[in-house]
Length: 392
Image 1 (cartoon, rainbow, N blue to C red):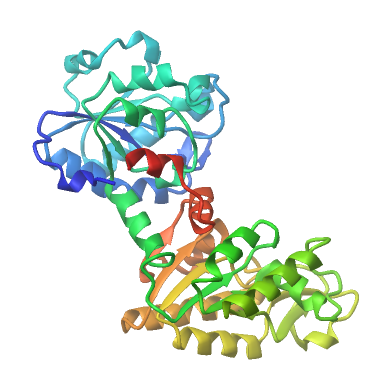
Image 2 (tube, one colour):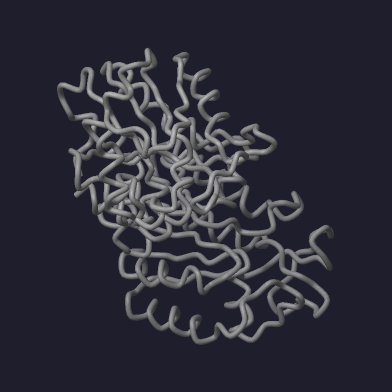
């Protein structure tokens, strides 16, 4: 994989830049600009190199049709303010743009082609569509790691027709993920949560041979608590998962990876209730497990203290209610403390975990925070991502 940072003679080149600008829009306004902010270094680098930038991106799922509410117009306006450069949104039908000369008639350095998913050919990974897109530029750059698990025309096929490079954000993402999958500094610990154990089983199986500890929290932990003969009351759990739990426990012995689940919990009668600390054998039929208890927090903190690398994916409890955010907050604070003294390398991913860190305003206190969602999880599962493979 070649990084655009190492490429010489970019001056006056037309760069087709694939970004993930799929930000939440409410009434035409952006409610969270995290994804835009993360790609600014690549844009600034290309501006300094005096290139002409043609951005390819999408918002939402228009399913091959033009949907006015999913226009990239507000994103262009946000970029204009942040870069202090004029940004032109090209609304012409892509098929009416015949070649790269089209962009010569404008003075702008930055163009955004309207939502690439307005064309059904994008998600169909259509070769002719990719070839047509490639005709607009001299060089292709993928800085959309979060889309790189998609075999789509502007991510995979386009690289067949142009010299292709990775962008700065994609480089950072892959480097961080390599540090927790291949270039590991041990001991290494994974803290993994979420409501469904079946969606994380492939990650656990892939990481187990490489990791020293896998700490299971959140709704997933309830399956383990129940498996060992405890009542979990009305707690969230995934049905018919005993076989999966058995498989994880058996593999953990084989691979010498410790599986840790809660020793004590916080419960309430409902999501808005007040917390009560309980041992695992004390949970009543009308109670819900909503966070980890103090004994479990102490145990996790001790494991973090004895780890050199941490992967965190999934909060420890129902953090939306502050009464049940304590476990997640204590985990976050401990990782941050060890980060600051350079005792640990930390990678965080997953929408809920990122939301939690955003709410605490500590997102910059970790070595790497991924907003990539599906691509992040598939990389951890050991799958080959089409967008990365295309760059190789």
